[in-house]
Image 1 (cartoon, helix red, strand yellow):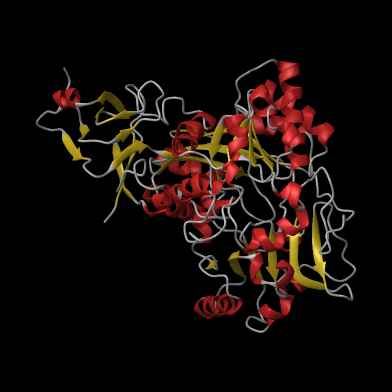
Image 2 (cartoon, rainbow, N blue to C red):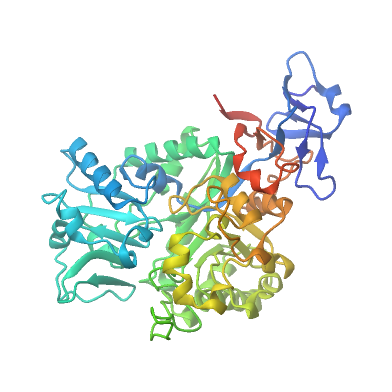
Length: 545
């Protein structure tokens, strides 16, 4: 019998395999798992076998992320990064320091600021003008659905009090109509298209930077949710293809080709051609991303009933459907017939319903083709639509880290949704009870890419750093095994990696060693776990120092 290249012993091993959920040993030959079991696995140890003692640690399948912007996030790490604070004075200090350190930069770009930091979630151009008056500044907020611009950037873009709002966005204004410096959704592109594009080398470096960080968090594969140009952001596809061809892409990556909402079905032949081209090594672009609505905090998420105002009265605004719902059904039916997976951004309950209607139209027209269409974000899901996920085979792609009380939720979201609709937010428990398949992701750089943090919130419905906060709709908590499965088997399923995501003989040896057994620890301690080792195809890609 061939001897193993790698053996893990003295357990525990959590397999995410319903046939045998727990084991104590696992052996790897080449890039695949050769055996899972107990002491009998030790028979595969030979003189050249690397043996890893798991005493006090936990071996699990590698995490995958079902919705992430890795190249964009990795590139943004090299720009003006505001993610580590929520203080306005801190923002201004960091921006000024970055501008001073980069005097040759034509534009100051980056982002990560939080809406909660500013009254009404709206920063002003004057704050930026005071520290960087002579160069244009454009900084995305944390959710990347809006951007903060200084006066110089607005001037260069020709945005004045007479500039109309674009159909898919909004220019926030001062009382006299002058642009205030905050641009929502599609309005960010009015300035964004002027930002000097990054180079191919910049984007490749961003991919490598992101991959290193993601491996350190136990992530062995992901779905990049936006391959294409968008609001001035360059297409990251070439970076993935280059890394796949030169062997530096160690993760398994599925790409979601961006659906240009300014166009219609005429772009589908182009998507087919891109799918054929973007297929090498561990990279394949087999999905199409359709962004159906915006976000709740700026009232662009599409809702079935109007948002409320500060007094609790209904407004005239129910959010935006970026793609006409009837046209959407036709597009998805055609994409499904061509065996594309459709990856929806669907955050409000109307957008969720429109996406499910489109999947239903495809199923009725084409039959069940197994294309694993999925709806990402699912902040508000109408109770009437919960059972439709299982009935249609649509996968719930959740971002658990957002399902917690924090200022943006409590001050900028719940009051404008109202009590009944607020209770429909992130209904993970209801989706599972309705038979839906869950996958999980982060939407990094919108929020932390750390799966352990996401799992902690999915189980506890509290931020790991806010142990005393109220539980966010406790009936929607997941048990730990279900949350782990969403980040492993569920996401591997969405990403088309049927031989990953669980630990069984014959599967790919995509593995993570945690520094503790979170399955036996108190739930409130899940977030303390750290990744010690990450393997992709049996090869070590991260080891904690």
